[in-house]
Image (cartoon, rainbow over all chains, first blue to last red; front, side):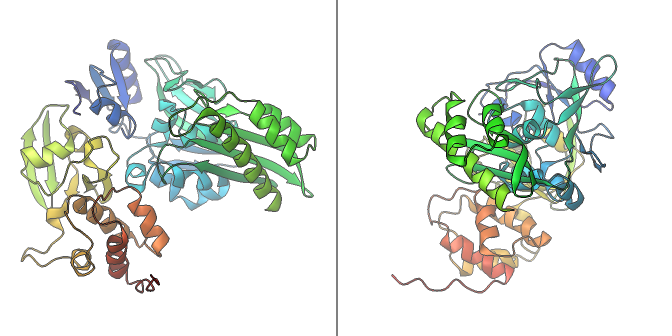
Length: 280
Length: 160
């Protein structure tokens, strides 16, 4: 229950961090550490070097622009949760952030860390997938933008190279006609979710003309339920949308949430989200 | 690596292994054993301390990460003459602890939330406590203690 011996480095710039990662293949980035530290304590992760991003200026901060909320990678989840302008511009964040761990982990856990960690049951990756957001990634060469589609490869694995550093997360700002919903089921508030659904819908005259539905904790990465999305826009009634959503996934089971239960939860939460955006 | 920080207003400097957890640093290096260690993977909340005013789990932080920070632990809640803080007094008054193992962590989380004015109703207190495991009392006394410290009216008596 203690980390294995490791060496800790605290670079002063993103370039220095990338160089440290490049030089040491068994290095791992630490941001807030709220997901990584349990893995270190259990010795499920045994990196030789920890590269802490906390000393790098410029990685904290939130910029609310017309088309996106750009969040510096080292911004804590709690800081984002307290930024009224960011939450107003991106209401799905306001709905999802209270589900991310507990206040004590959000005090230290970062937005960039949660995305880069790519936990299949984490809320922020599900939100980013739902909104078709993106991340800014720095490496040995020029920095690049990586879309959420393609970012989450599998559980705990993102498309970032070993010597790349995620520097910012961009959550798109949608038009005023969009409505949002986020629901998850956990055994206790703050626990890992058994299933979560994030939903963004463009509602015009009481009808959904465009919708994005993302599901978390049912596969090795957040999934967009595209068949259900198409059915909603085609005007299919909710009971049938539920059936389509449930048929479109192949959830894994766990002792607390067998696959059939998880499948039923997906259907129920999709309907709950859609009813909520239609009623808003 | 050399770690220099303040805990409860007092300056400390120690040379420690890079892998040393902050919880172990406080208990073993500084002898501040009021911070309790339960699960060591961020679930039970017993090891919660304030780092620059924010309640965090000291088992999920390395000591080297908080070099230069100002910490507050349960030893720093009471006045120098030993007088309990209003929150601590409320825990005594409302039977908010039994074995006391989880209590330091709860006190530190609640101290931050009280200072920030975030505990506006019992639901907020319940959500705060969702990050803390107590295996003796149930949570009724703990909720009542925090509610009293906030200034919320006592819960209505439930018919048995």
